[in-house]
Length: 601
Picture (spheres, rainbow, N blue to C red):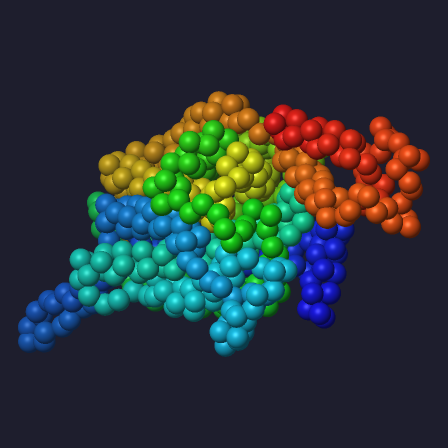
């Protein structure tokens, strides 16, 4: 009885007050692990694989009568192998997302109540409960379980990613290919259920948008923190590299070019491992806060009895849904444009703009601007709508990259344009995750018998997002290989500088324009899901009142009712609170109006 009372009280508080603030904060912190690891890999993984991963070669020279040995470190991975590792790992990550999302939706659990993963020992006792008022559907319980199982192994695999094994070049390529694929798989096991938790936080679509804004602000701050840490690592790398190049210029003859460097980059490798340990600690703490602080609420879209299509059938249903098609396809081009530009940001600063020493400050300004812009864009989208906000925010990126490409060596111009780029980056982070729940609501209204596909919606978008990132990394590395990028070289040819400028500005601008042209046909406006939810609530209220009227004997009026002769239909009474204030003709009329509204939405 106490459990039922608390459940009803909690549901009433949820309907009246939306999502509690503490739940929003804990949910937002759960997105930090993915962002810190993604930012760290985006900022420095390419440099780490190209220049830091090295193999020791023992050179010996015989100087009579003494035999002397000399250790020389040469780059272990060429640009082709780096592009292979980056493309295959990200493509693998993209493929695993829909599969994991489908498995999360298909797995069966019968436990009841608001269970957390650390209470798994009570699962067998609670699974026998037959309480019809259980607030947590089985799907939300499964989401948390996959989070707790994947976290420690994901942290361990991330640490192994930044460890350089001794051995030949072929073994190094295989090592980094396996470790990156393993980490991306475990990260998908964490991130896909986390994305799906947005549909189980409670409240309406405005409350979910607010929680998404909290999450995006926190994730931008997490990216800022990760970029600062990795920026320090890149500074260590640039400092050590400049010292080596200066030493080579002094020792080498004037007719030769100092390439590649002869140094082990011990300080740089130690800095990469230290940053990996820091990221792993942040990963573990934030995931623990998510487990302890977020209690999944029952979703209107979840139910015990529903249609369970096969994997291919579910994919066909998603891909045939027009709003989902337009949203995902347009944002694939947007993400590809941003990844193409920002994925080569470090190399652009070092070789094209010759501002490698100021890279840390440039990325800091960009991410601070993005962190400040997320709450501002949340206010703007409430004023002008999500679709207009997308066009407004992304249009800031085009002049910014064009100006930087024209005058790359001007630090004041670069810093000011980083502010505009940061505001545009905030748009690509906030808007798609705020619009996906609207698409899920629209899909549920058109396919009411097919439920439990929320993880597949989010995971398929993550698949397309990561596929765009893998294409960007692979294309960039292959183009650098084609123009003769030399791993570990102190200076690069003019062709490398030209390619970096092209990848930074012209190509992303074209991709953004293509994505905007596709996004013009996106059919959902944010007011439609609100009207749909209001009509759904009204329909449920009418059904409850109708069942109450049927159970009551019409020939025996209670003391609180007026005699039948004294009652008359009230045409203005559209919000009836109880069955004693209504008569049969108005109820049928209102039920007909509700049906018309549902058809119109």
